[in-house]
Structure formats: structure tokens, C-alpha cells
Length: 305
Length: 305
Image 1 (spheres, each protein chain N blue to C red):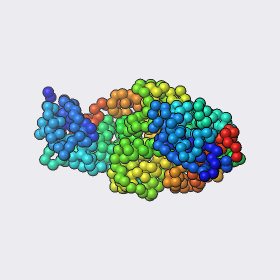
Image 2 (image 1 turned 30 degrees about the vertical axis):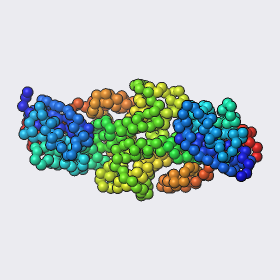
Image 3 (image 1 turned 120 degrees about the horizontal axis):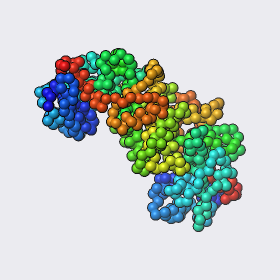
């Protein structure tokens, strides 16, 4: 096994994934464990860290972590940095965990024109893992998930971002609402497209359009097997329509080729939906968080190439 | 007790309310029972009807019911009538329940410009209870609830309507989402207004804006006691903004004074939110369903004045 020079941990709410990286930033080992912040009782984070590192590297290596481990519910709070934030700003804002070699990446906060805050924690590291370090051109990066993030990044690092509760809304509507009760197991790409298109139309109104997942079934125009994908399409279309308006207000108009990063089937679903809005999206690297942490650690002088 | 000439039952999903009305349409007795459609097992609707009538009138009187009792999950399905539908169309479409003197009011269906259906069942009767029978002017009627309805009614009866899942979205977000977990008990009118205003702004985007119920708390700018009302305000504002665009597309622009019908505190909340959109709404009659059923029954020749 090549020698590791850094342990990087993507440490979220429900699970944690630790990577050992060599001097060139290549992943030489990794392991995942159900040791997310919510699952650790009595503050036994140090034990969890030892467990995560076992077999992939030594705790004597420099260690870096991103995600909910730095939240108020995590090990040590790593306060939000304000946007814009580049590698340098983030690397200067790492929070050290006393008694360990671990440094935690801060989350980011930005504010819209009305001063209302938005936050991310973990995704900033993925974005930094996607951007080439010398990149000057503005990029749009989409991170689908429970709380999907759209980020605009450029020469000044991460300029701004916007969150959409797409994944969480889908889960609670599917599991708890009258719409979910109509749904049967099944997948239906045509129903997905139908939902996306409905939310992309000019007169879309989410809290009205969601009801059509019920009325189309009542009218015999949507099969129970299509309800889940139709609902997913409505929410995804609403996210895309709102995000495009947000990008336009943010001055991003031309040559929009967002990079979509995440689990393969989710990336495919987003690219399909974006294509209906005539947007050609590119898939991003799979292990963006590990790459991002390695780059931040390097910038912070924790590792040398 | 004045002599009753009609039993009218507002028979919903969870509860049922029966009214006895005299020859002039005045309510002479009423009773409510937890005998909603979902709570009746083994199809024992006839027993429920007997129980509802006990003490307020005789089952030998003509009886009329509206609401979910006429749905597929109800006693006998009363198929949806298409809009526009006036007293006469609805009175001609009552569904009789064999072996009883009960007639069930049909629900209504309308379709938007894309052909997507919307439905109501029970609210059509409330709307007819609000309209004066000779009214020619177009009216806008708002019925807040789990699935709020906005209806446009005029000389041709109920022309069209639009549903917003405001109440259900609030309930599941409050009970099941990350936003609800941040909320503490409490009410906060300023937070309600703040939510409404946020959703009324031009760049509003519901699945993004909802997340601000979390970020404002994280930033120390919204108290946990204000989260519920802020969330309610966001959803209510989104309903109002979408409904106003729908009304405009439907040709309703001038002198918009919607009538809001429902439970007093909900009507007050809607009027407060509508005022922020510079709309002066009027409260409607409290027992609109009973009035509507009496008028439909009269039109159907079931009762004589």
C-alpha cells in the first residue's frame, strides 16, 4: 500500500467516510461506517475517529474532516465562513480539535439581496474538489440531495449558493401525505418528465401543482406506479426553474453547463430533468469531497506534495 | 322546536356535522360526530346516518349530504360534475342512496389550460351557500384548509377553481421535517408576516424559501418560537402569490375582494396575510355548507319554501 499522508473524513449526519490519501492526493484506502453525527452518543467522537481510521491509516497522520461534524451538533463547532470564500479563506478558517491532529472545514454562509441567510456544510468541500485550482471562469455546480445546493464559483472561490429542499420534500410527501398514499411501487420515466415539464411552465405553482399528483390519478390519467416519479419530477422541475431564475439574477446567463455531483442515479435524474430545460449538464467527479479536503489541507500546509 | 323540513350533512373525512333546517332554510338543530368516512368500518354508513340524525330530525325527512361521503371511499360515489356548474346543474346531478331518503351532492372537476384536472368535494356546496342566488357579478371565494381552494363564481355558477396544499404541507413540514425540529411552541404574528412577505416577493421560490426557516434560526435571526408561524406565513404567502397570478390569468383583476370562509382563526390569518398583498378580504358566513345544501335541495325539489 502506498504511504498515506492525510486522512480525510466526509463526516455527515448519518454516516462517515474516511479516505487515506498519498502525497499526490490519490486515494489509497477508504472506509465507510454508520458513525454519522446523529448516531454518536455521549460525545464519543474520539472513539468514532479511532474506529474510522483503523485499517486505513494512523491517527498520527494529519486529519481533516468536513460536514456536520463541524455543526453545533457535531464534535467542535466550525463557524460558518461568509461567501465569497476561496481555498485560501477556507484553509485559514479550519477549526482544530484539541488533543487530536484533526482539523474541521468550516461551513459557508451567504446572504441574498434581502439579507436572508443560506448555509452549506460539507458541500463547500465538494465544490472545491470540483474546481480546478487555477480556474478563472465562473462555474455552476449542482449538488443534489436532501437539501440540494446550487453554487456559483469563480476566481474568488465560492461566490454564492442557493438551497432547495427537494429531497426532503420528496421524502415527506411520499411517506406522509395524501399523495404518497396514492402511490404504488414503480418507476416511470415518462411520469418523471411530465412532472418536470409541469413545474418548468411559466405558470407553475408548486403547492398547487403537487395536488395534480392526486387529481391525475383520480381522473385515470396517471397510474399509481407513476405517482412517485411524477412527484419527484414536479419537485425537481420546481428546483430547476427557481435555480435558473436565481442564476439569471446572479448574472449567470450564457454557456450554462452546470456540473452535477453526487450519487450516479441522482446525477442521471438531474441531467435528464435539466435536458428538458434545454440545459446540458456534465457529471462531476465521484469523490469530490476527498479531493476538496486534500486541496484544502495542502493549502493549509497540512500536507506537502 | 320549529318543524324541520330537511336534514343536511356536511360529511367529511374525519367528522360529520348534521343540520336540521326548517321550511325557510334556518338551522333549527345540529349535531357533530366523529363519523367521518375514514372512521366508518365495514361500510356501516346506514348506522352512522341513523346516529347522526338521532335527536335532530327523523330519517323520514329528505336528507342531503356533501363532502367525502360521495367519494370512492364514501358510501356511494357521486361522480364529479365539470365546471362551470350552477345550482341547477348540481341539483340535477345528485346521487341517491338506495334504501334511504339521502341524496349526495357531486364534487366538481375543472381543467386548467394544459388539461390538468383539479377537484373539490364539499367546497362546491360552501361556495353555493355563499353566493346569493341571483348574483351576476363574479366573485372570488377562498376556502382555507388542508387543501385550500380558490374559486371563481359568477352568473354561470362555479366557473373554475384552484387547489393549494397549504394546510397539508404545513402539517407535514411542522411534524416531519428538519424545520419542524427547530420549532418551539409559540405564536408570533411578526414571524407570520415575515414569512408571508418573503413568499410574496417577485423572486420567491417555495422549496428554497422554506429552508430559510432553518437558516434564520441558525443565524440567530428567528426565535424557535417563531418558526411555526414563519413557516405558515411562507406557505400562505406562496398560496396567495400563486392564486393572484391564477386569478389574473383567469381574467379577474379589478375590485378583488375575496370572501374567505372557514374556521374563525384561519379566516383571520388569511385576511391578515391578504392585507399584506394589499387585498381586502371579507369573511363569509359561518355555516355556508348548510346554506348551500338547503339551496341545492330546494332547487332539486326536495323541499318547498
